[in-house]
Image (cartoon, rainbow, N blue to C red; front, top):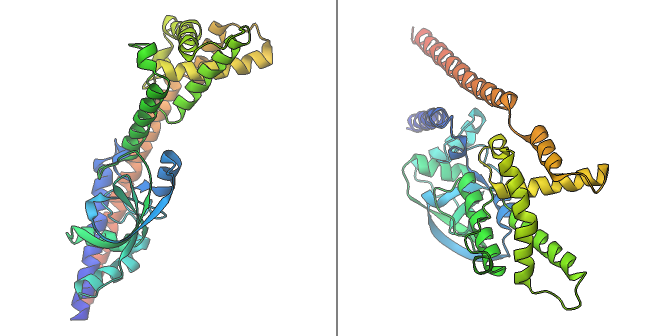
Length: 327
């Protein structure tokens, strides 16, 4: 009886590995959909304020979206990605098949979703076997940003950016002072940098004043005399075409940083137009960049095709050995 169950566990793992492989092929052009989230990456992005012990809970398996240390070993459906996971995975599956009760897993809760602290193989086996919930000991990391069960790295990045933008607009009363102004960015942390520019400009204006100017005046002055002229240079030189999927505010921040570096090297009179063009020339996407992206994609496709060929060869070899042993 045990030999039959062990064989069933082996087949369960083989099936899970095959499904993981085909999922990788299906998501070849959107690899962000394929992987689990890294808890460390989420910590660095969200910067939670503290931890709270929640005790024992029954957690929906489809709300577990990442792992603390094994996020590379399983895909987003917690299917095993590598052969070296076989031994432990099959032992857990065998326990499941023989109705052995395993200890609860340990999870972190972040924004309404969960990350595995301990028990990755148990989560993987449970999902493979069609289980919908699992008992877990939960520690919550406190954050204001809500997450969801289909959260990917890209979704997480956008959620944090949106939260930072709302906070930036609210604290500085931007909609009130600059109605219609758009400060969209594509990376986290950039609204803090934008706010530093505004306060730096306010400090500069106050150097010539007896009475401190109000924030509203400083924001309008920065927008009219600093931000808009640089965005105008970006538009006139068609620099956005060199930075696909970025925004004028992204480019504004990068060019200001680059301009400061060039002024430190070449003198304070270094022109803005030249700084913008120099940045685009060094960091903008050209034909070579597009060719390199195509080459890397082609290499990934070739790698997957070779894996298919090797896997097929191994299956034929195992089948031949079984047939010879049968005689």
